[in-house]
Structure formats: C-alpha cells, structure tokens
Length: 131
Image (cartoon, rainbow, N blue to C red; front, side, top):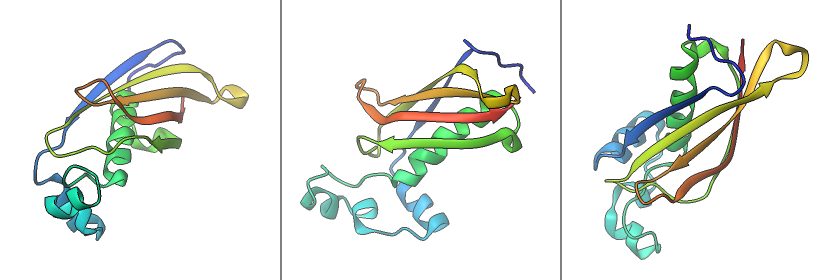
C-alpha cells in the first residue's frame, strides 16, 4: 500500500467515451433518457446526453482508492456536483492529503475534478481514509 502523508498529492484521469452512460446505465439501472439520448439531453438544456453523476462520483472514489492502494481504507467521501460530464469529456481528479482525522488513525483530504476546459465538475469534494 502506498504511504501517503499530509501534503501528498495524486492525480487520476478518466475520459467519458460515448458508450459510458449506456454502460453505467446497465450497471446501475439509471436509464434516464438525458443519459442515453442526446436529443433528450439537448431538449433539457444540457447540450446532449450527459454521464450519470454517480458515475462521476465513482471515478472520484476510484482516484482516492488508486492513490491509497486499498479499497477497504476508504472511510468517507463527499462530493457536490457542479457541472455535468458529457461524452468526450476528460476529467482530471487531483487529490491532496490535508491532515489527520480525529484520533490520528485516518487521513483526510480534498479532491478537485476538472474537465479538459478547466471547469469544475465536482466542488468541495473531501475524503477520509484509514492510515
């Protein structure tokens, strides 16, 4: 397991291919037409189909777990969605360990998620992992 201490940073990148909303819909049961049909997404003012927010959150969790090296170490994650991810978007997650949790048995950190245009797709994301 990688050793992370306060001040450590990590990055993770994911690209939303045109089939990702369909794959995620099959896995999650979320077949809301705004995720599957570009015309419906456009009519809703979204510019086309968009990725399910929970998939974006799953990618954020993946970023933290990959950095920590142990999925069981993840104790808490919080995110606020600020912009949809569309097929073709590349999202870069940048995490930083900001300190120790209460009691010193955990580490806490922040996570940003930006698309290829530098726009935040998540804001205020935080996490807590076991040491």
